[in-house]
Image (tube, rainbow over all chains, first blue to last red; front, side, top):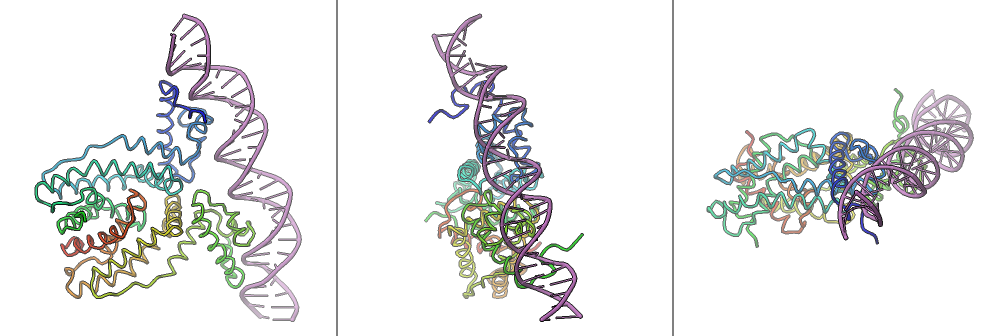
Length: 201
Length: 201
DNA sequence: AGCTTAACGGGAATCGATTCCCCTTATATG
DNA sequence: CATATAAGGGGAATCGATTCCCGTTAAGCT
């Protein structure tokens, strides 16, 4: 088996092409979604030959997987207010804003659709969320240190509990993603956390 | 605009064809997912002509939307233990079992992918969950009547809170869907509910 | 700076999903 | 139970995404 294209000479043009293609792919996904993603169109938007896109990525799902790997790297730093509720509320509102934003929401729908169709894309998606969860876990751990939550609380589980209701609305039930929903998500996670639901067995 | 096929003579053959095609579509989706759903293959599995499938449904997403409408009708009755925690635990385990089952999980991934690609499929998906949520809301309302939860608690919001962490794992983070996760989902919803997080403003 | 060859680019060829055409079957109605 | 026509079926024609071919450009190395 030979080296995959882009691994031997990753500098200059290769890197520029990758950036341009991922950018164009994000735009195309946000515009007409995963089902109508046309690699030739992405190539044209990116100003590169379609052959290049097919050769380096090969399929729509592989392109999305690479896009997700790229998205995972760009981390937005978390906020740090004094109390757990405020921190988690900030997280919930950040997630809500992302899922309610027209462009971002379409992009997320598209990558989740891709992940539902392909194992590699699913793995990339899981890594993306693992990174995000890891970023916000510290503020829960600080709260445990302050005595706001019981000892042994699983910080990642608390962070997941905040996002979960918002994603459930976004992907499954379609209920409105308003600010009240974000507040409830944060408050519910805190209430459950204080009750010891997330203490590791 | 003329009548859509299947609306003027819905009896006999038409109904048989619809049932056979939806059945075959479910099998095909469970087997290779939404991205590789081929309407011609569905037609062959169902023992009908491919023209029929294209004429009556027209696209993969429309077929999935119809499948979802069909799934929404087949309701599994909820359990009724004495306490809220037990009822919600039963719900959480039912959801977990569904999402962990190899065939059903693929089917759900496929319909969610389809819903991410098409508004009509999304509407059908939302209706499906609205039906399911409505089915389980009564056991929360009974708990409010028993004084287990504060007056004014939004029963549907409690039911959503139970499913949410499971769907979040299933679709986004990829964390394991074990029985402990289902228990935590039910317990977290109860704890938040008792704390008054789901009381309508 | 010069050389090797990885990686790119355009256009033709291919391949498979969808559509079209026209005949056949069987539902609904009187 | 006869009739009109809605709905279905098979196969050819079409159309667009993907692949192939081969010439061009520029990254990496000495």
